[in-house]
Length: 634
Image 1: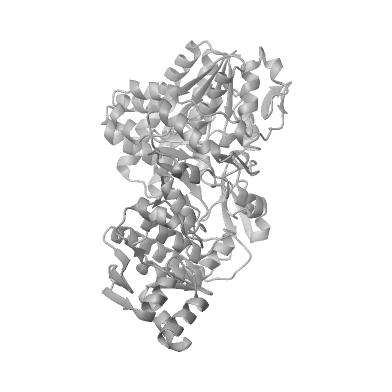
Image 2: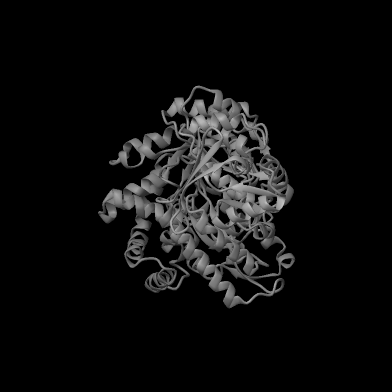
């Protein structure tokens, strides 16, 4: 059966879809009919620019904002929803007015709201044109990948296909179709013939090899309509190493055909995957995390495949920036050491756990890791325990110090309003922030959500949570009548009904102060400097942090020894003993020095450990520091 895979809006313009590219690569292994790939989000980008007669450079920003920043309001889905709700919804004009008011309530600027309304107006025409193009391929089956804001765009195009060619099969897969959401999609939208739950390789291989729908009865992970009901085949969990290297040829062909390829091409990064699932989640799932859905079981490719995969991708496409889609970097055999030793100028990105030390981060930077997303979430150890992060404030601060030192861009988020949060957890972060403005600030400050598959959702009573139903955005995203939005939704409204008793007015004030202080942190970061350099028997400290910096200081003798012992973290008992012995000071006098340094924000004290918050400026380049740190043992 001939199959065409489609990546709908709002996939990042700068990332070819690894989902359809991995599945399309199965065709090169000789499994059934050819598999085509269509990058519908690039088609949408060009169509929208021309339909709205807007500046393409300006629309790149609009596209990125909708796809990345406004996902939580359902904007990307709502834009494509008019044809789905036309028969049973409230009517188009009331729908537009209600949603515009919803967006403005959430702080979306009027100019952007007007652009969103204009995009909604032209989206049905785009869906029809793309459906015409897909039907003209002669393919018998069309498969849409869906995650984040891709579900309703996929449904809009799928419906247009069925209007034109009812005999063709349309199926959906991806995060929005994981159990039980996929079955809910089929019940809500009868024109969808099937969904793929879990990993798609087995189902796609079966479709490509099938001669008719009857051949798909046993396809793993496929939910099919059968005699008025849904027939469900359980998904198969496959070894990670069986997944082929993605095939991105069609993405680059479509990119080259854009009238303005220079807007996107210089910023493209090639996605790859080394593992599936989450090894930390298998052990202790973070309370708020539903990211892996039902696919938590961790599987990783042998580390030796990392260099081989990246060389294959970069040589094939001439792009040297890459992007790991793994939920978490493998603990041991991750291939970074071999990549660091390879003579290639590849840069890459990984999601990592934030308790990595100097040696691990040095190795990452030497391997070309220039951006990371660490699961920091908070700088309060108490809050991190509530979130079951398996890290402390000490770990997170050390991570940020090392990233600043090595030139690694740390992209992280700050969470609050988790169940049982206490005022002191917010207050300690408010006290800390003025001392760390030289370190990378969080991208966002937000309240903890309750997402499907997370412990908060699966066992709300354990956390004193009462679920209040789907988030409000789903009333707009799935606007038809008679729909089970609870089954379709991923994020849910909630309220804490038992647990720690706090003054809600006080907590709200503290959270607002935290958000404002992070906003100031972002403004000050570019001008904030807190660094040190080693000399022969001295350390020179340069403290030019806005509002708290005290200028240049020279540390000698025991103070130099004490400071050095806490660089990248050290045990206080050992550091105090060494400094006291060197200078003949009592332990109490050394502790007085530590308290003074902590008061100035030179060091962070937590339990039995201390951490210098300044960043070493060795006057070497970042790779030189990385090579040095790779040899350290902590």
